Structure formats: C-alpha cells, structure tokens
Image (tube, rainbow, N blue to C red):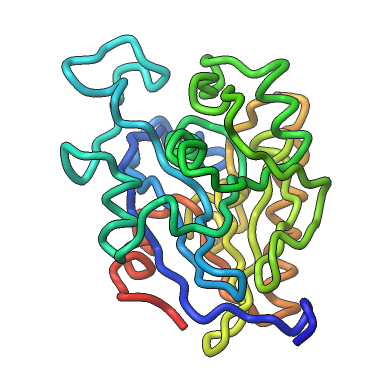
Length: 263
C-alpha cells in the first residue's frame, strides 16, 4: 500500500480537562463571556501504530491553591486528581511507551503539558519548525507558552515545514495565525473517511456555522493569517468531503470523546 492510500482504523477523542476562556479569544468579535472549553487530545491507530495528537495541560501548577498562573484567575480543571494524559491513555489500555509517534499543533500551555511523559518514554514528537523556533526564541508566559513544558534536551523533535506527511494516514496541514507555526491534522479513516482536526485554527463550531475566525494570535502580526487558515480548512473539508472538527468546542467535542472510538 502506498503512503497516499494508507488509512487509519481507529480514532479516539480524549478530554484531558477544561479551561475557562473569554469568548473573544476563540471567536473573532466575541464577547468577554467566559466559555468552559475542553482541553483535548486525539489517539489515532495508524499503520505505524498508535499516534497521539496533542498532549493537554500539565495539572500540577494549578493545584494546591495556585494563584499566579498563565491562566490568571480562571484556572483549568481536570477529570481527577491524577495526571490527565496518563489516565486518558490508560483508559484505552495504553501508556506513553506504547505510542509510535506524537504531534503537537502548537506549544500553548493547553497542548504542551504532557510532553514530559513523551520525553521520558522516548516518543518522537512532530511539530512545525516555525512553531518551535517561536516558542524557544520569542514566546512568553504572557501569550500562554510555558517553557518548562517544551525546553527539554530529551524531547525527540521531528520538525516539519508546512504541509507534510506525519505518518501514512496522518498529514499536517499548515494553519498559522493563532500561533506562528500552528498546524491542523488530516486523518484518513478506513470507514468514516477523512477527518480534519482543526485544533486551534478553529476553536468553536460557531466559528464554522457563522463563518468567524478564531479571535487571538500569539504574535499580533499574524492576525490576518487566522482568516486565511480558517478559510483553507473550510474549503479543504468541502473539497474532500471531510469531517471538520473544531479544537475546543464544548458543544461538539463531547460526541467525539464519548464514543468508544471511530473507525
């Protein structure tokens, strides 16, 4: 089977916590109303084995009465007192060492928090080169980057430049704007067809339904790219008859995560 014909046979949505986000962050022109949004990850069983997309948020800085955090007064909450990524994997009989590969769309705190587990297990992690450079050279806590999550010598990075094959069945789709090197994912499934996981290029289903881009950029100079990336994903979904999944939608994500797995 050629790489272009390769498909995945299982997709599992994980809810690794919830964060309190002002609507204007997730929706251009939004209000200051606080929206409780899921912190997500996705497990995909590809020809290479199990692949993890996103790693969630490290819960440790937000416990024991923490107040000085990147989230300000709106602390995230988690499904239990344990580690959300480890427990999410364990619910499906997996541990970090069982993963063949992982990827992170960008290095915001709610996507980078489980990288330490992948480093410990020696799992390679795909990321856009531009994102990694921004995170290392310019990013700060003020724009939701926590260097302790990703500045580790033992992380095995696989750096990508724009659209790329992550592994047969899973492609990176460059969608900068929310962050300089943000990427979304195209996953080709055996039975349910093509899935486009927008991650933070489109946060909410309302963004799709109302044709409104995400409302925030780590680098203000990237703001015009948010609309371009939004439009690209919508057009790609139409062209490929793909299922387009926003990355933090409290209305649509539960139906993805509550299923035993999609084929």
